[in-house]
Amino acid sequence: MLDEFKEETIVNKVGGRFKLSSLIQKRLVQLNRGARPLVETQSNDTMQIVISEILNNKIFLDNSGNVAVSADDTPDLESIIDDAGPGLDDL
Image (tube, rainbow, N blue to C red; front, side, top):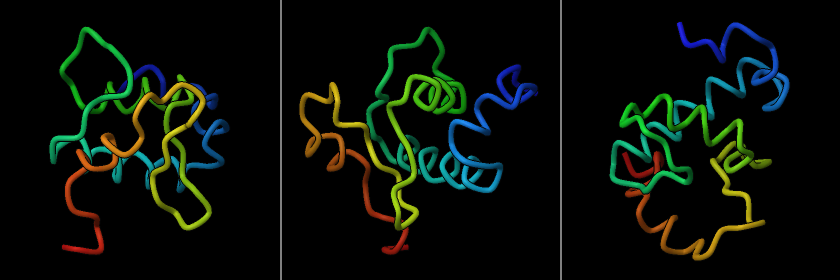
């Protein structure tokens, strides 16, 4: 198990275990479809990338339950969204 899940910090940051699970699953789909990571890591492990993005406040679930990107330092939001591949509704 990843060390980040041993503490409640990441669960509280997202707003609960269900939201955390949903955010992780949706972001993993985006990364596996070719979306660019929003953080620089030494690891190519997509799960570790998602955890880093959450802990660095780069992604969150919006009110409709979709992955949203923090706009505070995002240089080109449209290119990030375009890289995410088809949405889950398109499956």
